[in-house]
Image 1 (cartoon, helix red, strand yellow):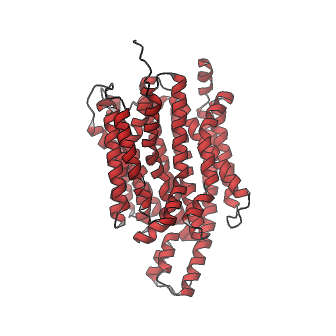
Image 2 (spheres, rainbow, N blue to C red):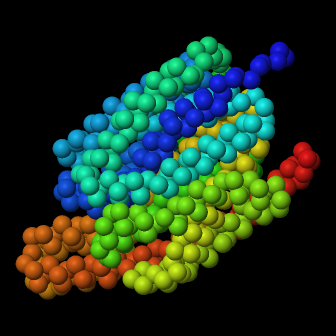
Image 3 (cartoon, helix red, strand yellow):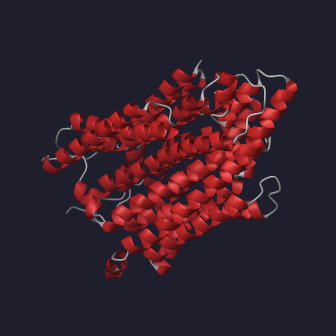
Length: 506
């Protein structure tokens, strides 16, 4: 094995790829605060709104593994630069979308660009830093940028909406890309090692089709938006595609995804934690953003400020988790962080947001910190269970878990909210049947309907909507609390064997 000299520009490379990564993360959460404004501006239905938010993490979830392996084949620098270009162009398209359908299409393009950027960033960091200590530090910084980016998303979104139209939340990516793309072009080494072999486009398509069909059927099914037959057919189709993909992976000479990775209990546990923790974080954020604006009448920026404790605490969780798991072992840190998250959600469910005092901000900070410690613990579990040569594959699995978690979290929270909201709202007398039918769908729809009503009727309807939403959100938070509590116990058992392996190393 010949000795490679450390790349003298490696820290500059790290800055460039972290900047490339930032808009991709921002785009996951920046929309949460913009939803009410955007819904009213585009006259989007609640289904369209869910698709606008969701199509991005959904598609990304399906594309990350194929794009990660493509980058290994043709070179990470090339795929990263193409991804940055697509992402910049799609951002401009999204900003000026005239209607909901165009915006959904632009978000699909954003997901394509993002899925090219994310695996390359990890791969480039892995290659630029040969020294293990330096690499751990670089990955820690990368994690902090990820958490901080997702954290300030709602705040930046809110600040932009105070002064500009909703499209500005996308337009902000364009100048960033104009700086980052040339920087990456100049800084990243042109010569890179690529892995031989063909890129199996058929396997990639199976995976994408399977992932999207399954998640779509879950969304449509719980939301009762589609006839049951359609939902079941889509689900069966999706599961068949995924089964076919799995079969191909087991028999292929060069599988796109090494399914043997799933036989490590720690990797499986890590993926479950990543999906649930990122799902809970995204779902709670979206629910809060709507509660604060629709029910408490805050502006988008005020809503962003209210959520600062959740975000700021989430941004410091990464380094804290690394330190704690070296001290107490991963198993204890992972299961305890989830357990405390569950208790915190339970308390938040009974809090009165009209009079938050100090209690609500403190609870939000604890929740952000604990979920983020859980997420970092999942990284440690996944990355600590594979040898370096499979780091890329493990990295794309982890990124996929985040995306899936975010997408599913938003879908399930959104769908659960609209189902519970429909039950909780009492429609005032005298509304036309079609108005009443639209008003019960979601609080956004309730506000859209009031625009067509007289003052008194409108005021009564909004009052009913606010009351229903508040009671719905406590049911939602208590349910989430129960689920995460159960998960904490599961993780404790799944990581039972991880401890011995960890101590053997030291």
